Image (cartoon, rainbow, N blue to C red):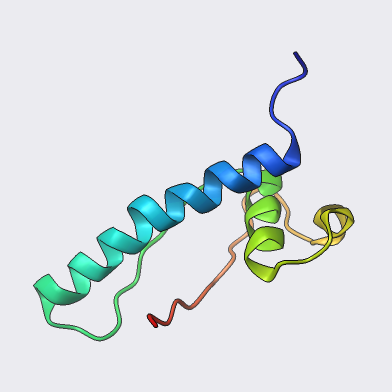
Length: 81
């Protein structure tokens, strides 16, 4: 087996964000009684690119066009529904 496909990585990372990160952020907001909280997440450039492609709902071919070097800082803002 050649390992995970980009789609597998995207699904795994998106699932983790939904199941763990978003839940933790919501709990932090409630616990600290703050509207905005900051979190820092570390990962590899391809995993981040797959995640960004997934949340942007763009074509899989776009993954390689997302400029995201190792040790890059990617800042995202999450707004609850």
